[in-house]
Image 1 (cartoon, helix red, strand yellow):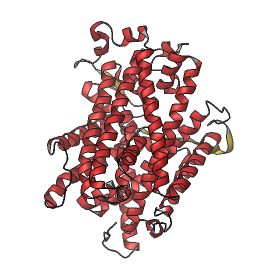
Image 2 (tube, rainbow, N blue to C red; image 1 turned 180 degrees about the vertical axis):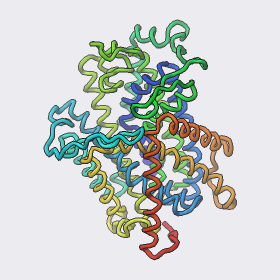
Image 3 (tube, rainbow, N blue to C red; image 1 turned 180 degrees about the horizontal axis):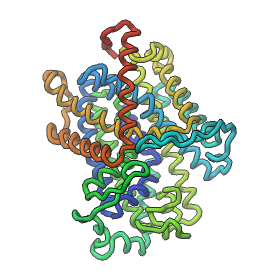
Image 4 (cartoon, rainbow, N blue to C red; image 1 turned 90 degrees about the horizontal axis):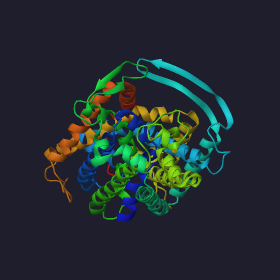
Length: 501
């Protein structure tokens, strides 16, 4: 893979369905157009700093496994395993399942028989189980036409990726290009289909309305946990709280590092792909939110009969982008948006399938995963067994209905691993000062340190105000510790040896 394919993986993995829906929930929380944009700008700054920091690690260690390898080399094999464990159990496979089912749901716009309510085999419903601030369970088990569509897409793309990295990267190039064009088209809607009433409501004369509710002294209501008390917090805290949505929508940019072993001239192309890919996507994300504000008023009434009356905050099923397109182009708008989301989700699934399998391959090579997963196909030179193990667990998550709940739980864990990995950048500068570094992190040490401070602040806020997103994530990560010890003991390693990838 060259620079274009590597950049396509970065962009394709990031551009899922999140950008089209999370702004509704975020706008309900912040209640201010300025704070909505501020939240996305915070995400953009953090993601770009993270990508620039990872660029040094990627150029320094251009091996299959990416972030797993960086954590292993900087902090030790246990930390690498905990990342790989969480990635396989939830982060990668859960995201693939969620995006795959989103593909099925939006396919239903064109084929109404594809629906999460149309069951082919309904095993049963798991009742809600309240544990402190969390609600576990509350999900249906079985096969419906929406998750069947997800399984078919995941299976098809897994087969294509077993044929060789060229096939997987070709699919990625095509669909990433289409997705970027689709997002750019949404941005153009804001230029040609502005709604005068929405512009007045969200911006007003001299942008007075835009800044309303964004004053330092303004307090914002936040419900602590599930069904917990309401707390009133300031601007910095509320922007940190809503990062759950924007950071998730921008996540998976690091997937390209998993495929480092198959990228041409990785010391040059990996840092460039990270910088270019994250920069372009995040610019489009911010512009899309300005489009939302130029077509629909932020505030709305959930009981309103019109799209404009519901506004961004109460767009039907939180599908803000679909509401914007319907407002601009009437009935055909929903189909145009659904087509764009189908392109987005298809490419996202492909990018994450291609990248994730390389981590489990690297773990197996270190003796920390099933031995067969660490073998490459003689014909295609791809980790075929790793791809199929990933496929099996992902399909099970599709059937379980638990992937959405699991994804909520790991947002906090994902941030923890980003903090640890960038901390590893400082550790490696000290422990391996003479190692070749074809690219050095831009703004080091100030920008990487700024990322750690910002991400730590978000983690502290989420621990305090959104415990339902934090403690389960920590539990999932910590469950990997005894698994690591048992796996090491079973292999008779005592101490896991690190093999060259």
